[in-house]
Amino acid sequence: MALSIIILAAGQGTRMMSNRPKVLHNLAGKPMLQHVVDTSKSLNPEQIFVVVGYKSELVEDVMSGQLLHFIKQKDLLGTGHAVAQCISSVKSGNDILVLTGDVPLVSRGTISSFLSASKETDVNVLSFMPSNPYGYGRIVRNSEQAVCAILEQKDAGELEQEIIESNSGIIFITGRHVKHLIGLLDNNNAQSEYYLTDVIKHASSGGFKVDAMICSEADEVNGVNNQLQLSMVERIYQKKLAYRLMSEGVKVYDPARIDIRGQLTVGKDVVIDINCVFEGVVHLADRVHIGAGCIIKNSQIATNTKILPMTMIDDSNIGQNAVIGPFSRLRPGTECADNTKIGNFVETKKASIGAGSKVNHLSYIGDAILGKDVNIGAGTITCNYDGANKFQTIIEDDVFIGSDTQLVAPVTIGQGATIGAGSTITRNTAAHQLTFSRSKQVSISSWQRPTKIKEV
Ligand code: UD1
Ligand code: CA
Image (tube, rainbow, N blue to C red; front, side, top):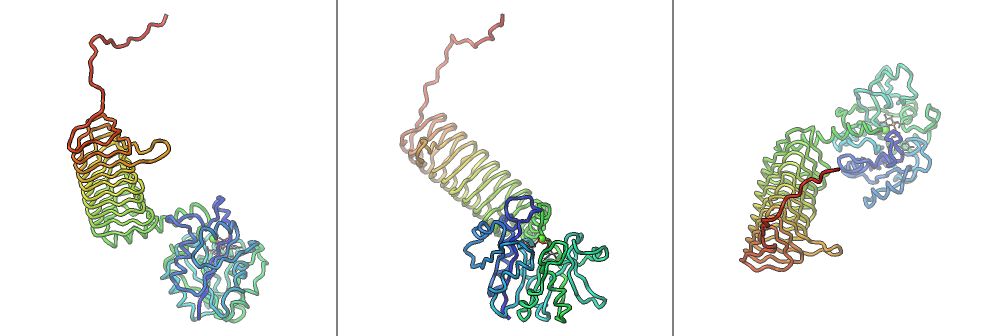
């Protein structure tokens, strides 16, 4: 039977204490809802519905372009009401799988085995054994251990509150009976809401086959209702990513102190020290070392390169055997060739640094093309901006720039040239010559140091 997935995402998430809809809060750099959508897509269902309500335009905008069917739930009357809004759009006869936008970690593997187990049932619930079940709907089983109802926290009596087995919110309903069962829901309960969970009670008393599959990976079905739970789910997820990296051979100094917000791919013998953040698409080739406290975004780092601590690299490519950092900031459009060196307090932007070139200390290199084996002295600045427009600096092969030089763009430094320290270079310089621009050094023998004026 074909499958339609319904993702519930209409709630505000008041317990997040935020103006942003709960399902748009980021987990590992992407909205929680996107995690659920990605997992849903991996199951190849015939339809994916997303029920939106609170700030629906924003949610639809963030999630646009993904072939999702958005269903607007005007009044948020409960999870059962949310599913009811989709029923007329669900392809007739399709089984439905209900997921919630605030249970983001559930994996494709878990859902696949849940769907396999669901084939034998009319209604199936993915349950779990949380360490603290408070707040979850509890699975009520009869003396034969058959599932007969789900009781929400607020409706559960003292005895039922003792039940540990809880509803993950993930529910399967067969296409044969879905319309009938959803039609039976009412709002006679503590919250005056149409609970999807009441489907269990109706299916059970109607003689349908009802079951609950206990999820062996309880961590996957943690719900996120507040910032604390979001932070816990983030750590669970990050640890999983760190374990995956280690299983691929990466030395991760501490799996509790790494953040991957995107796709990080690695070669062999990669080392990652503590407190590093990887965002977007990042590749670290064989034997790359990342020092502590680095933030690397949408960048490629080639074989054998070392990124020393506290370095930020954004939208850049680094060649082989390079050494970058500590405390370097590589802004978008930086291309460092093989054997380059970028040192502390160096900022680069739209800069191509040729093979073997070095920018070791305290420099700004922006809108610049450096040839091979260039040496940039400490404190060198490419003055790329005149207040209105940006201009380029070209530094040819084997150039040596003395410390504290300003290169006022547009300007070209000819091959093999040397620039004397402390120069302000405003015109192109000749190849293989020494160029400097500074006033002659003088000593004034009659000069006296000022002395402090005595107060009267
Ligand atoms: C729900 C379940 C509970 C389960 C828990 C698992 C019900 C009645 N309760 O409780 O049994 O243990 O999830 O995490 O189903 N939503 C809508 N429209 C609405 C109301 C909610 O789309 O009118 C969406 C929310 O945006 C959220 C999801 O449904 O993504 C769950 O709603 P929430 O209020 O968080 O339910 P819980 O109290 O967590
Ligand atoms: Ca919830």
